[in-house]
Image 1 (cartoon, rainbow, N blue to C red):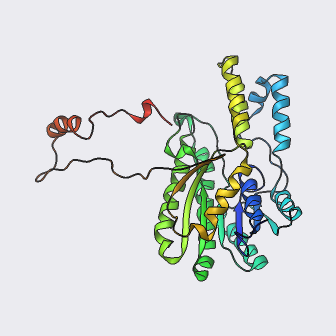
Image 2: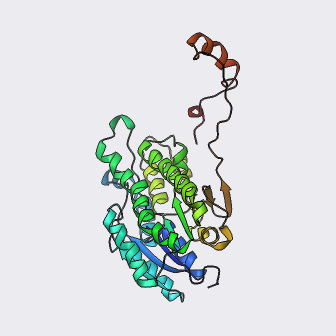
Image 3: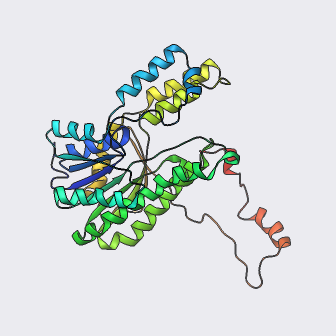
Length: 330
């Protein structure tokens, strides 16, 4: 334990397992008092794997998956217990933060237990695969109700307390999918892009009032990452070499505990001037996403552009050398 976050109180949503758990423990190691959270008591099962995929795996692959599911099991209370065993202070809160009033109770418990809230880290998330032409309204809402809605719910109830203190840190978990992934989860891509928009909006609104807001896209070994590997291995159209590569890629994925130091830094007083930024974090690599500024533009005086003018001018100016991002996504 160190004193970087001494006397700070942090809420980490979605911290029963994986990335959220790694961050919660990392903050506690720097002296923060932590409120952990996930929806229900006990470890959850698979997020995307169905019987169809499980039955398509070999016996060896199923044993590999079973071992990982056990290794990455846990809930908010088991994370809080680990923190206490390390000598820190932590309490757990179980509840579905998609519900506005439940998010309010989370913050109320934090204030009631520790007297303040300095840090809010939104990590909870969900995902599914579905081609856009088959997507139902229910599938869309299922993903969007977590990101960004649950994030907004928690921010909305935490910010008044931070403003009274004239200081606060908000960190929202996004994904590289916010830039558009070439796989079948457009709703997930859109939800994570919404997190980036929410982050930048809150940052611009609150920066001069002492509250910063940043986003982070983590790369870490979690239940989602090994489920994705298993999902690929269950695909009958893939050859053995491709399946092996997916498994090897998972094995190379950094531990979620590696996120602790950078998240503690961004939660501390050292990060006073950092806001509205999207970080890309994985293992020992820390990056910043480029801002979505207008790269180039053309302008004309007088009446509006005509089709004939655009047909002539666009290829010679802003479209010169242009290639669709969809030709090389990611």
